[in-house]
Length: 524
Image (cartoon, rainbow, N blue to C red; front, top):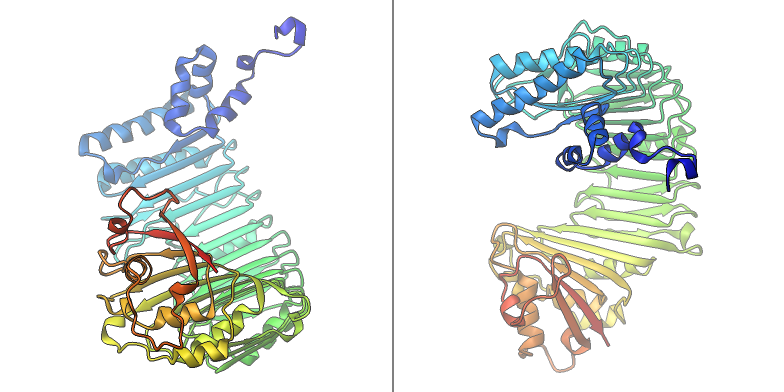
């Protein structure tokens, strides 16, 4: 509609709208809009968001030089013509220390000091030399988000300056990953930037104590640490609702955090006193995730009236019993080296909606393993199972009394949504193992995701099993009173990893060389 009739200016007369469209496109596609008209060209040459995310490691030497020149020319043009830069995403490789490092320091300084800058995201690959960030990386008065990411290196580091100029009083989000920052600097940032809402510190080093104090707006705190004996202190953060702390042993000292609803802890020494601390400090908890590598007891007992989601991950062979009293619990996830007995007495009447079980088996299992899993499947409406078998090549086959298991299990669980199955280091033992016979005695999954062996990629044992037991219908040698599981299988459909139908020659596709197959099973 013409401007005179609608009373609205044409699209091309609204540069802010053109900028928004260009920012939604990939960089190359956005650059191609320049040929549409002069308005689009002008919009592209003044776009307030700059994205330089080309990985220079994949470029030839001359291509890398040209790429650096493009960045340098673009920033010079913006600064010379006083074109505002509101957001910049910059990826730099310091392999050529004399050239790229000096350019990187100049670029960061030139944009970080501008009052128009709102978001600064820097990814620096410290492949052959350490790199120190400029003093004024936190100088921008209107900076609301700072993300600094270094590459993992045991030799070189991405260093935060020891004497930063901190003027970013409007900072809301601070994300640091693989950054070496001193304890003095990290505490100075927290004491100066009082409007912080979101803090993420992943694999950072240079400090022993993290003090989160007097941050009244802080909502999200995530810390992943590989430094040993690190101390975390959290005090006077009344609006904190999401806490995620994972890493090497971490001593935790905190106030009662009444508004925290989502909590994750990992690789912290855990015992009953630790669980009592959680119940005391987090009275309104709705989601709890525990990485239990350092759990020291045989049983896990937890009571929480508000809990809705619980995940117990990385559980060792020591844990044999889990009892949870949580009347509002509707989702439970377990991952460990064996199958413990599960009891959810408080949620028995309300009904657990979803249960997800993941087991990493490196030892033979017996009948009790399958019975515990069968009982666990009775606790929920929606069920998913993941099974990973490791180092099977050095272990004897499982010896399970299938007839006795069938009598004790009575009937299989029918509504298992999905089974994911993979092996590590198995040269063929599982194709004749009674494990599948026992497993299909306790449940009939609707979908099976069969992955090839991680070490022997040409082996996909479940595919070979389907060929032998279902397609060829060979006698498995079981006693006559036991009906083998293929009897209950009416039919199946198999697709590739991306759920595409396999080509002609189904048996050829299932001979064990299939990379990743998805089976949809139809049981009697």
